[in-house]
Each structure stands twice: as C-alpha cells, then as structure tokens.
Length: 539
Image (cartoon, rainbow, N blue to C red; front, side, top):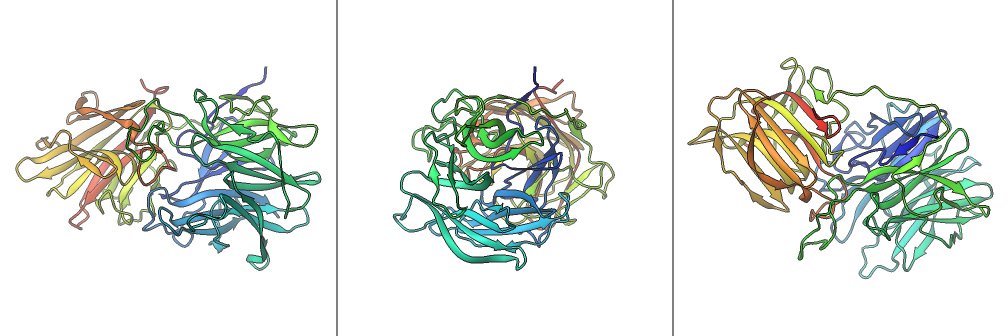
C-alpha cells in the first residue's frame, strides 16, 4: 500500500503556495505579509516531508516594509525555474484598506535557491498576485489580477498579461486583458502549457469559505480562454464539515515519474464564530491562518486537469508519489539561543533586527532584546515570533529583566497583528516595584485583566502560554519551571484569527518574545531559551 501524505503539509500561516521541481528537489514559496524576512521557501524530495529552507528577501535593498499595515507587505509569491535560474515574482502591498491600492510587483533571481538573490526588478503594478510563465520558445510573460478603485468597479475581476524581457530586465509590449469577469472574481493566476494548450489556472471567489480553483484553456497564450464546465475543480464551499476549508489558490508540479500534484491554500476552523455586529458576522475563526495542502491530480481524456479522487473536495490524506522517502533531521522543541544566528522559524515585523535590536553574543547562551517601540508600531519593534502550527501547544521562556519605569516591558506574547494580542509581561510600577501583568488587545480594545502583581526582586522569571483550541492560559514562576502557577483568567484564543481582526485577516497567529522601552533608552531583557511544544511532543 502506498504511503499517504497528511495535510496540511505546511502547517500554520503558510498561504498562497507556489511550487517547482528542479531535478529531484521540490520547493514551495509562501506569503509572509508584514513579517520579515520576506517569503518562506520550504524544501522536499518526496512531497511528504518538508523543511523550512530559506527566506530569499533578506536585505533592506530587496524589501523595506516600514509603515505597512496588518496583512499588507508580501503577497502571493510565484517561484519558477528556467534557463538555469530561479525566478521569484511577488507583490509588495503598501496600502490596501483604502480606495486606491498600492500593489507594487517585483522580480528577483538567483542561480542557487539559497541565494544570493538579486535586488528587485520593478514590474507593472496593475494589481497583485503576479505569476511568471516561461514559454517553450524562450519568451516570458507575467499574468496578474487587476485592482479597480472605481465605484462601482467596471468588472468583478480582471486578469492581464504582458511580456517580460529578461535581456532588458523590464516589461515590454502591450498589456493584454485575458479575463474580464462579470460574475466570478479570479486572482492568483498561473499559466502553464501542456501539449497544444495554454492553461489559465486561477483562484476564484475570494479567499474565505467560498474559495475555489478554476481552470481555463486556450491555444494562444493571449486567449481567448474557454472555461472547463465543471469548475471549480477544487473547493470546500459545499461542505462545512471538511477539515480543509478555504481550499483554492493552487499551483502545479509534475514529478520526475509523470505524476501531477497541486498545492493549495487551506484552513482549519474552530467552531467559534464572530458575534453579531462584527465585520465578518457569523464567520468561523481560523487562528492557524491559511496553510498549505497538496492534492493528487489527473488529466481527463479530453485534456482537462481534475482531482484524482473523483470529486472536487480536498482530502486530508493523499496518495504519495512514487518517490523514495526522504526524512529531515528533527529539531528540538527548545531553542537555547546558543547559535550565532536566530533560527529560521523566527521572524520579526517589517524590518530586520540589527545589533541595535538584539544580540546573541552580548551574553553567551542568551538572546538579548533591546527595548524599542510599542506593540502598535509599524516601524521598530523588538519582537521575534514563530507560527502556531496546531490547535494545542505550549510555549515558554525564561527571562532576566530589570525594568525601572512603567514604560519598560518585556515578556511572552501571542499575537495576530498590532491590534490583536495577549501579552504576559514584566514591568515596573511606582508603588509595587517589579511586577507582572497581562495586556490584552482585541481590535483596539485594551484591558489588563489582572492589574499588576508584584514579584519582588525575582531574577529569573519563567513565562508560559498553553493553548487548547480556543482557550489560552498563561502561567509564571519566579523559582523554576517545575513550579508554574496560573496567572489570569482563561482567555479567548479564537480572537487571534482570520476574519476576527478588523484590519488584517490574511496571516495567522504567532507566539514569541518581545521587549519595549518607551523612554527611548533601550533597556534590555535577556532570554535564556524559547520552547514551543505541540500536543504530540508535550511531556
């Protein structure tokens, strides 16, 4: 019996997957939005096991996200390989929750997947979700959707095509409109060619629970494209009980043995729903964000691509390809900060953290975070975090910190964006001295559910968060990690979710550590370790 692939293959906030195969290696690029470095690339050799490999956009000359809002920044990267080079196109969204969108599209290239990647080449900016297609005659084309700020918009959805000159490093020729939709909104387009047909493979109907994937084809790259009469070929919209909801935004890969697979975004829902009067009233909540899954595909006798399972529903388990199994070394749950660089799982917000933000060498075996701006800042936060990957986990840290005023804070945070978080932190109070507190933020509603609790002259402070689906409980200790005690009430973890946040709803919940000094003097906190354990690994 063939081995199965268990979905999602990239768990937690890893949306908009783009996949390629180069010889025996498979790579998936996913969106990172306001998190730095830009774009995550995972690697596999068997489509079953994956490891986080690199972040290609890792220099300010490539990417500067200062000032971008929640769920803006890097959208829908497309990774391709041609002419012995890797090509990555992507959108930098600088403004979106407004009338006129700023969606700037760029291209970077590299001869090695590990880089170095070039500085960005500007492309056209008609809309987001750019994708590069390499035709078999050597010409290259970029397809993307088009935003329309007019009220009302002239078309429900539009896709355009333009040629890219690799020699001149710019877009050339006329811009052609290859899709004008009056009913179905298309985005995330990819073009690929098989036989005599060009196939236009696009996400349809938004990125929520109505999401799906459509396919069209033409004998010319410029169209006109005809619809497959059984679209959407992949969707979960008709069955709310499926584990993999929001299925769509696909990309395709053919194995070295001629098997076809599609990667797509998906999401796993809680039963919690948004209350009446909220922005997305009645919508289910998805704290893990949009993840990446994979489905086996097949070609019909009349040359259309469909799911191999005979339906248009995404499956939790998929037949694996005929490839040798390839395992990666497992990583420990605890990071003791004894390396020269931060682990790839950690990301910061909008900019790289230089030595004015953190140090791994100032104190051996510790991560020192220098306090910077507050949690609402779009410019300079001393914060690192990693993705929630399961509904049940615990995260913990040990911190040494000597705040001197109430504007000094450091601790453990669970967050979705700058308006939605739960922050267990140590600070200073004029009457209490060193103390511990919890700050909660839900769409700009801020509360301190326990006030401030004095902890005396405690040197080492242990902090822990336990998440059980929609429940979050904080713990602390001032003696050792074997003597944690609960602090504060059980909190509603479901608010850190797609559709629950008023401004951003495209990312996913993160957990990490941070330090603020609102005096500007950069008072620091030393973190001995950070540990993340899912339900499968907890003792």
